[in-house]
Amino acid sequence: PAAACGSRFVVPSGEAVVRCPACRRRVCATCGAEGGHEGFSCQAYEAWKRENSSAEQHFEELMTEQQWKRCPKCRAPSERESGCNFMQCRSEVCRKRTFWCYICGRQLPRDAHYSHFPRGPYEDECCTPEAD
Image 1 (cartoon, rainbow, N blue to C red):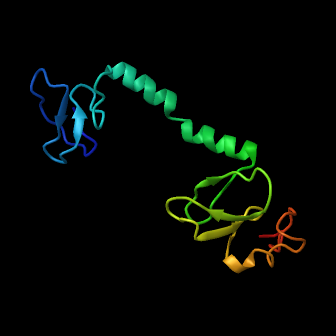
Image 2: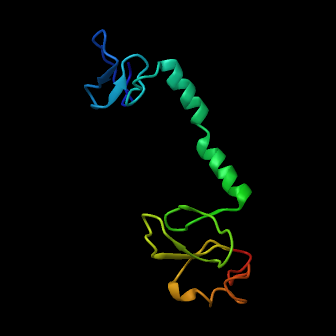
Image 3: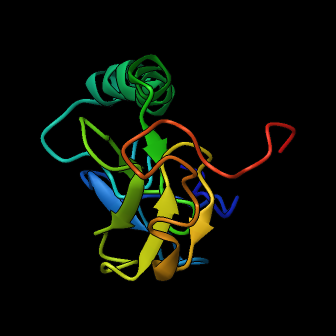
C-alpha cells in the first residue's frame, strides 16, 4: 500500500493493518486507508467515506437555513432561540470568557451588554454600521 506520506512498502501476507516504516502511521494493508478500518471491508469503508464526505457542507447549509451563527473567537455554532442578542460563548475553548453580538457577529467587551445595542439587547439592532 501507499501511506499518506507517499511511501510504498511490501506487506506480509495475512496482515489487515500495518505500520508504515517511513512515517509510522497505521494503514489498511489492502487499500492504504489511514488508521485502517477493522471490521469493515475496503468497499464498505469507501462507501461510508463517500456518504459522510459532505457532512460539513450539509451542516453549513443547515446553519444558513436556520440562521445560526458562530462564535467569532472559537467558531463554535450557536443558536439564539429567543432573548438577548448579547451572547456569551460556553465552548470548551472560550469557557464563558468571550462575549459577542448575535446580529453582527463581532466580539464585544463584557461591558458592551447595553452600549452596543441602541434600543437594548432584545431588539435586532446593533451599533455596527451596515457597510461592515
